[in-house]
Length: 349
Image (cartoon, rainbow, N blue to C red; front, side, top):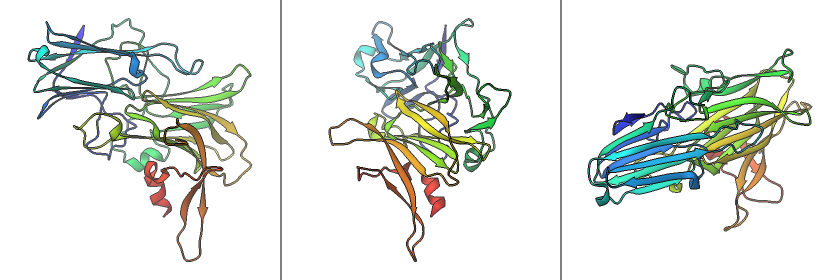
């Protein structure tokens, strides 16, 4: 069964995407007639580059695509594979069209020059294994960007819960399902849950779909007003799209509702357009805990990205205003913290 999408239709907006970034891609898919031809974008968060199949059929002027997103963190996320599939039908002979395809960071893009057509998806059957996660959905209609980050719908709240074996409960967050054509697997762009390890320790697991982004321009701010703030930006030169005026940005928070608990980052990763985060509870001995920034840096020009933790401290000089600084032991490189978290640094100046 196929569900058509017209050549001027986009999907439902991503709730964690920075709304004020105008001109950036929105929604889980897009089919747009541009001046030079037909432009197609389909988000496939979690699908590795080598797991996407694109096949053309000249006799029917059709291009099919499919992708599978297998679970990455075993024991923390659903064991089911997310599957995406659809096809594009052109208005002319496909054999005469030299189309371009790019698959990167959980996003498929196709461009058909001097062509028009339509985007279609395979619809999941009523008995499919697509299921929603347990995140509570909050309506964000009418809320401005500041409200979203002050314990609003873009924040996971950690509260004491004596009735829960873990002693805490997670609320908040926005589990928006923006792709109704997902064939199987967990739906919703966001999920959080408490996971108990074999040794009895408990961690908070968080997943956020952030297509177009990678570890080169992403980070986690730890102990920012007792919260953990995460951000991811798309690097425009990393993907083929001359049809977008701006790149996508995503933000979110994890915030304890009490003053007696503190939480730290155990592991942080972005792979194939999916942000994953593990958080553990720590002692709250310090009234003003240090501010840390987790990111990846390239140790050399041709080296591989390596996880790094930078301490962000306040440096005050007489007659000068307070300004944030960054440092990391053994490395003089400084991360683009102000670029990823502009609102934080504007409020500090």
